[in-house]
Every structure is written in C-alpha cells, then in structure tokens.
Image 1 (cartoon, rainbow, N blue to C red):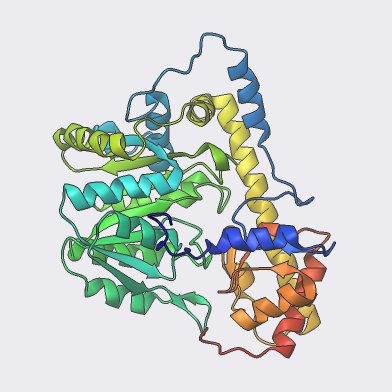
Image 2 (image 1 turned 180 degrees about the vertical axis):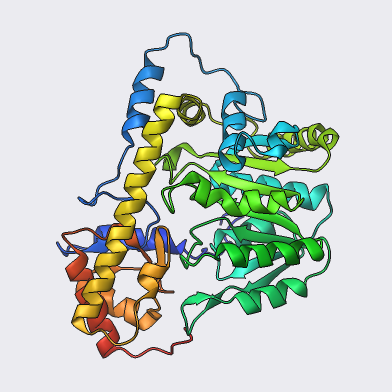
Length: 410
C-alpha cells in the first residue's frame, strides 16, 4: 500500500482532454475548434517570420549566456512591455508610476498579482465575469482569496454583453474588491464592451473604489491594432485609476510554450513602486524563482527595434484579419443554409473565440457525427476554420441545430 492510496483521480483539464480525443480520432475530416492556438489556412501552427529572424540572430550572438536574470525579469523586456500596453508617451510612464515584472505568461502574471493583492493589500474578494476563462477561478483560489464572486457579463438571448447586469453587480461590490476585466477579445465569449460601455464600467469602478485587474492576453491579436486593443487600459488610467494588467505573449507572438508574460502595475505615487517590486520579488522567488530568458529576449528584441516592430505589426494584422475572414465565411455559410436562429453574433464578436450559442448536446452531436470538436459550452476557436473546412463545419453546425434542440439559456 502506498501512503497516497487515498488520493482521488482529478478530472482532466477540459481543453486538453478535448485535444487528446481529437488526436485519437481517425476521421480524416476532423476539426479541432477547442484548443486556443492560432492556425494558418493549412491548419498548421505559425511561427511568426520575425520570431524566426530574431531566433537566428540570437543563436549567432555568442556573447549571450544562460545566467540567471533578475527576479523581476529582463529589464529590456519589462520596460518594452510597459510601453506596449500603456504607450511610451503615457503619463504613467513619463511620471515613473508604472512597473513591469516578468512572469510565466498571462497565468503567471495573474497569479503574481493575485498573491500580492492577497498577502500585501489584504484584499480577499474578487469579481469575475460570468463566464470567464476557467483558470481565473483556480488562480484566485490558490492565492487564498476567500470569496470568488461573479458579475453578469454574457446575455444568452442576445449573445452579447449584459452591460446592465454587469454594472448593477459591480455597483453592489464592496470597496477594495478586485474586479477582473478582459482588456480585449473576451475569453470565452468574444464579446467586448464598446468604448462608451468601457467608460461606464470605469465610472463604477472608480466610484466604488474597486481594484481593477486587467487580463490582456490578446493585445494586437484581437483587432490587429495594439492601440485599439489597449484602449480600455489607457482609458482607465486617464481616469486616475490604479490598476494591474497581466500581459501574455503566447498569442500575439505565437510563443505558446515559452511562457512569456508581464505584470504591469500602475500606481498614483511613484515612491510606492519600488516597495511593490520588492514584495513581488519575494513572491516570485517562491513561485518560480527566476523567469525564462529565451522568449523574453525575442520579444524585447522585436519591441525595441523599429524595423522588427513594424514587421510584427504586419504579422498581428495578418492573424487578426484571417480570423475575421473566417468569422464572416462561417456566418455566410450558416445564413445560406438557413440554419435556425440568428448568427450575426459570429461576426459581432471579436478575437480567437466565439460563444456560438451551441449547447452541450449539439456539441456532442457534432463530435460524434462530424468529428468537429468544440468546448461543451459552445466556445469555438475561429482560427481552426479554414477555406477548406468552413463548409464542413457550417454543415455540422446546421445539422446539430436542426436536429438537436437545446435550452437557449445554456
């Protein structure tokens, strides 16, 4: 007998279990719309050309080594990350009120920020959008937040933003509650507030003295414009709101397995910044001790070089435009097929994911009959669609909706 014999088998992580089932499927027409990764029109991962170029450049530089970085990360990377999410001419940057801290992608940045808020600020209530990226729940539970509360976000009947419910729930939040806001390309719904709605949200957060924590996993990747995608963050700062922002370079640089991210903190008093950094170093020391170097050098080299930066801007425009074209293609196919229901939300939503409105039985029908794999909540990765498979996927959706009736509230 092992001393661990009483340990229970944990349930699989849904998205990875879905990918495993997809890989085991022998259907030649199978499509994986579950995993959150960019794919080309040939259904292949895309290593950005500018990333290839910089990797070659770094490999030829024999002055580089594998020594430890500072606990807070590669300085050229963290400063460039702050400038990317805020703008180099932002008053918070010019007044030395912004701090960048390298983390293990967006997940690590969220965890670092959550640990700091729990340990140092003694905040213990967090408001998460309903629905949200599932990992948000685990991160804040692990950081010892005592209460995880939901605010209304997605409105099932319109498949759009529930702005009235969101504002009402945030108005009911206690002072110093942490509120998680997706900066752009909300995961899983693909539904973002308009700029006017963002202004309403900022007004409530400021009036209620809520602590704003942005999750910015898709900056540049969503619309193709960094300035457009970061606008909510910069607007909140313009209102004098202190905030944290978790950045990821998995999607917009295609560096999924390099785990490169940054936690940007903006405060109103520059003297506070170094004290925050010192406490984050203590937290990071026991979480991961020291951050990875390779991906950080790739990102910092690109962001700090105007020529390479211009190439990267072209790449994110390429990715975002392909996703938009696939949204349009799917919408047109469903409309042509006469698929029951309205499907304009497919093109109204933005970013990698669409909350399609499909229910779990319809998703299961597509998997069994067409080998089209999607998450049970109906979330589908729009860049899994290609010019070669979009008709096939549209037919799968049409057949599922026509034959399997779901509760529209699901």
